[in-house]
Structure formats: structure tokens, C-alpha cells
Length: 266
Length: 356
Image (cartoon, rainbow over all chains, first blue to last red; front, side):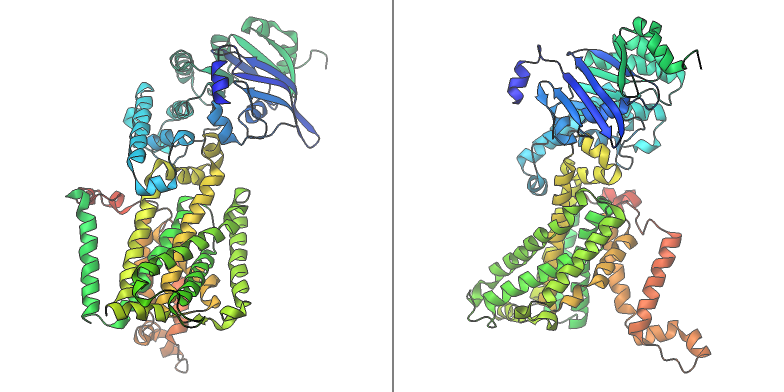
């Protein structure tokens, strides 16, 4: 299955969602949502509070099972897969509220994210044979390299909870990249950052997009971030897609303005 | 040198202990206390794997000890005893067969841990605590109703195995096995939790959702972790059964589980060295408070006021130890070590040993 998907990489979309619907009891959080992300795209998803953006991300990362609709990651359907399996297909995400493992060192945070391709199990970890040692050195080396390119190497033995907020955001993105994703989902990466940090974040996302050869899909409330980074934006409100297009179209779209600012005639 | 210093120290200590036990420099009582310490170290370090490292709240650890104790006792009687007919193995093979018996007991205990680990996929915290207590009761009640292994009267006959060992060489065999299995336990746990594989356990503790999303197979890790913990507790049960020579379902009830929990919380959640230190301290304290003279001294202000009252050590002990817990939880809720290892608390120790 994997090899077949790899051959098709150039032609198949990294993410293809069709007819995605999610109902929580009587509430339709997402309704008939469709999207197609080609490799190398940097695209955005916006909408007012409670529009269902994070629900879409939760569905893609396998955290919820959709009520209806199909999600294909690189051509592979994710229906029925548990989140860790979806991650091993090449989806990594960050969270709206940072969810690092606060009592594990920065290095361990990066290392554990490689769990699905450890290549050894419990008995190897106890016996510590050659395979274990080799894999463990590789993992550590890779983690250190990742920390170095993210300029986090001086925090290697630090605990994430002691790091500044902006650095924690950065570390969370680094951790997500540690699982070798094809698709990186960023859930409000600029939330809680000051304007200097936001500028830094824009640079960081663009740099990740180029350096790691990864497709990025992000949710964000900071319009300037979206306008600057994304070439394609989708707007949803109450689970319905209300607009999509390039940043300029979105800026002038009447439906979007209504959704965010409300109607004239009250 | 640094790499082997701790191992060397342990070997010297173990040999010293065994030699002094063999030549009767330390009496039987001290030997029993040392063996109890060893068993308690296994219990507390293995429970620490679940309650400390994984952050789940289980309070039925004695159930797994019980399974291990019964399975290995029955096997031991089958293999070397005469209760169920002629022994299966010649007495000479006891030194090879006995550890295998203990390990089988551990494996069965590990399998029985599925009763807790499968519900733990969906439940956490207080709810899992209730499940684990229920499992503890289930196992005890089941054994109490199995008449062919003694039921609530208990089961005995394992001493035949110990005597078979003594026939080969007259030495402190059970002390030897306890030392061996305690070292084995600490070794396994240490290696497991310091590997990237085992750090998945810590990740589950700190943020299960993030762990699952970051590709940790949380269900599998939970099963593995519960199995390791329960398996080691099962080995402890087997050792316990062969030291006492008698097992009774009620000796593995919720009180025993609580004892293991107290040791974990006393030592500090998620700290291996803390669990070891607290097992030693706690067992020591239990033994010290067994002395009527010390208890009399401690409660002398009260007995002075109420001259008619004659407190017995066995009762007052269980007033003082919970009181100690209350005080501990008030003033040092993180336990003695508090999620840190010995070498984190005293960084200078790092110069002298490396423990992997």
C-alpha cells in the first residue's frame, strides 16, 4: 500500500477530503467539506470562532471518525485508523493550546515523536542488542540535527515548561516535523504570540515549507499571517464552506465579511 | 570503571549478604526482613511503572502478586512436591526449574493484567482505580472459591521446593533468589523506561492525546507497561509464596495493594530510585514499629493520661503509619524524591556511577 502511494506522490494529492460531515448529536460541526491539497501547497483555513476549523483538523488527524465522507492521505483512506496510524501515514499536527510533554526534556519530546518508526520493541529495549543501539543513536542524532536547524540546541536538556511561549510553539512544530510528515497541520500557530514573534513565525513557516518539503495547511486568526503565507484560503462558518480562493479574493468576499463582522441590517 | 562501579558495588553487597547469611552472622529474622525488603522493592518499582511513569491510578497491584504467587506455588508443588502425586521433576533440577516457575507465574500475572489494561484504553484516573480494585477483589474471590487449591484456607507445600534446593547445597537460597529477581526487576524497568520506546509511557502520562497524535501507539504501550508491571509483581508473589511456604488469598487483599501504593507515593511518582528507597524505609519502619517497647515509648504521654489503656504494637502501628502518610502528603506531596532520580538530587554522584 505504501509503495503504491509513494509512486503516485507526484500525481496524487497529499490530502483529499470529499463530502466530510461530522455531527455531534444534533449539531453539525462540519458539513460537506471538500478540499484537495497538492504536494508543496501552503494553504489556509479560516473562519469565525466555532466554525469547525479545529474539528476538520481533528478529523484529518484521526482523532474523530467522520460521520460521513472520505479522507485520503496520499491516496490512502484513513477511515477506521487510529491517530497514531494516521500519523505514520505522514500527517503531523500542532495544537491550538500547546501540548508538549512538559516533564520530558526537549530532546525526549523530539525523540518520542519518532515512535512509529522505532523499529524495535520492548525486548530489544531490555536486551539492548545491536539493532537497538543503532536505532537509538540514529534517533538521537536526528533529534539533535532537528533541534540544531531550529536553533533550539541550547535547550536540549531543558524542560519545555521552562521555555518562553514563542519557543514552545517553535518546539511543538519541531516535534511535529520529527515524525517526517508529508502534511503538516498547524492549528493557530500564532495564537498568543506578540507581533515580533508573529513575524518570526511567518519566516519560520515559510522556511519550513521550503526546507522540509512539506505541505502545510494552517488555521489562523491573524489575517496578516494568512495573507502573507497562504496562496489558497478556505473560509468556513458553522461547518459550511462559504468561500475559497486566493487572499485577495477572500479579503473582498462579501460572505466572508458578513460572517466575521455581521450583517448591515439587524 | 564508572560504568561498572554500581554493578560491582551491588555484587559485593549481595555476596556479603549471602555469605553472612550462610555463616549465620545474621539471624533468620534479619534475613526475612531483607527478603521482605527485596519483595517490596519489586512491588513498589513495578507499581511505580504504572502509577508513576504512566500516571494511571491503579490500586489493585496485589492482585497480580496473588496470581503469580498461586501459579508458581501450584507449579512448584506439581514439579517438586508430593501433594498432587509424584514430583514431575527430579529434585536435582530444582535450580533450573525454580526460576522458570517464577517466570511462568510472572507471565500468567502479566496476562491477568489485561483485565485492567484493556479497560484503561477508555478510562483513566478514579474510574480506572475502581476497575483495578474490582479486579483485585475478583481474583481473590475466585481463588477463595477454588477448593482444589485450598480455597480460603490457603495453599501450602511449596517448601518442598526450597528443601530440594537445600539438599543440593545448604545455603540461604531464597535470599539468593530474592536478590537475583530484585536486581532483574530494577534492571528491566530501568532499561525499559530509559529507551525511546519506554519514554512513550511518560508521554502518555503527560498528555495522552498528544502522545497518540505524535505516533505513539498508546493502547499497545499501555498493555506492555501493565504487563511488565504485573509480570514483575507476579515474580514477587512467587518469591513471597516460597519464603513463607503458605499463601492465602486474603494476604493479597486491598491492604497489600495499599502498601505498594504507599511505597510509590512515599518515594515519589515516577522515580525509580525513590521507589527503591521508600521500599527500604517503609519495610524498615514496619519492622521497627513491630517492637512493643518502641510503641510504648511513643504513646507514653497517652498511656500516662489513661493508665488503663494498654496499646498493642500491631494496632498502633496502623495508626502511626497512615498518620505519617497524612503528614507526608501535607508537607511533601511529591514524595521523598519527587519525580527525580538519585543522581538528579545529588549531581555529584554522577561522577561515580552510571546506571543503565
